Length: 360
Image (cartoon, rainbow, N blue to C red; front, side, top):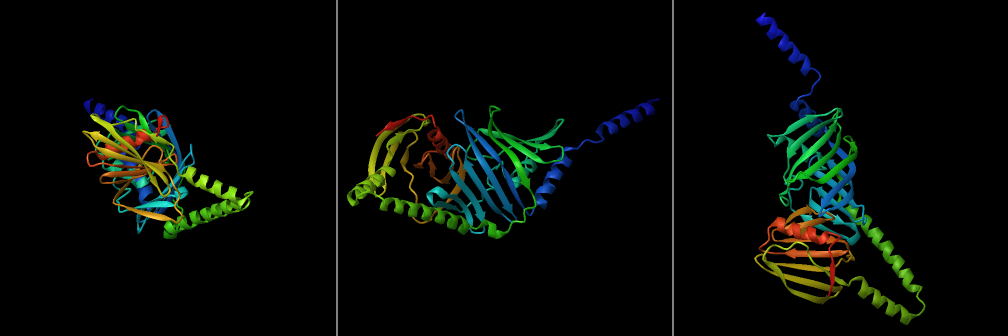
C-alpha cells in the first residue's frame, strides 16, 4: 500500500510537469536564437520616464557578427535623430542635424545593460544567479538584475516573451518598482543578411552632406531673391546673429547639496554667444550653454569615454565631463568633484521641459 502511494505521487508529479518549460529550457531557447543569428534588425518604440515626463523614441537596431551595431533613435516629440554606430573603427554617436559625430574608444554595448540589444539581454539573464521565470497564460516573463553604471536607481528588468519565445517587450524598473524604461518591439528579423558595408560611417556622412548642400543651395536662392542689396545684407547680418544667439540661461533643477551658483558670465563667440555658469561649494562644477550650431563640414570629435542615454538625447561622457545637445542647445558640464551619476542627474534636470529659463 505504501509503495502504491509513492507510485501515484510520482505519477501525479510527472503528469503535472508534462508540457511545462523549465527555466533552463526557456533560457536555452533564447540563447540559441541569439547565438544563431548572424545578423538581425529590431524595430520598436522606447519610452523613458524622467522627472514625471515620458520621452518616446522610435527605435531601429541592427547587428552583425562580430560586434557591428547600428542603433537609430528618433525622439518623437522633436524629431531629433541620433545614431549609435559600432564598426571595426570604433563607436560613434552621429547627430545628422548638426553634421557632427563623437568617436569613442569604448566597450559599448558590453559595459552596461542595453534593453534593445539581444546579446545584452542574454548576458543579463546568464549573469544573474537569482534570475526568475514567471509563466502566464500568454507570456513567459524573465526577471533579472541590470547594470546601468550611470544610474544606480535602475535595479531590475522584466523581459516578456510570448509562448513561442518571441520577444515582445522589456521593462526596466527603479528601486521603487516604477518602470523607467520600456521597449516594445514591433518587428524582429533574425535573418537580415546584413554585411559590413551596412555599418559604414561614410554612408551617414554622405547622406547628411547631401541634405546640407541642398539646404545651403535653397538658402542661396532665397538670398538672391531679396529686394535690394542693402536689405539683403541687413537681413543676412540679422539672421546670422539671431540663429546662433542663446536668449535664455537654463538652470538645472538638481544641484548637489551645499553647492550654489557663484557666477554667471556671457561671452561672445565667432558663432554667437556662450553662457558660463560656475557652481561652487562641496561639489564644484562648470556648466557651459550655447545655441547648437550645424558644422559646415562633417565633424568627428574624439572622446575617451562612453555614450550615455539621457531622457531626450545621447550624451558623450568622459572621465570628468559630459557633453550633449537638447532642444537646440549644446551643453558642456565639467567637474573634478561630481560623480558620473551626479553629472547625469544634473543633465537630466536640464533636459526637463518644465525647467524655467532665466533671461540673461
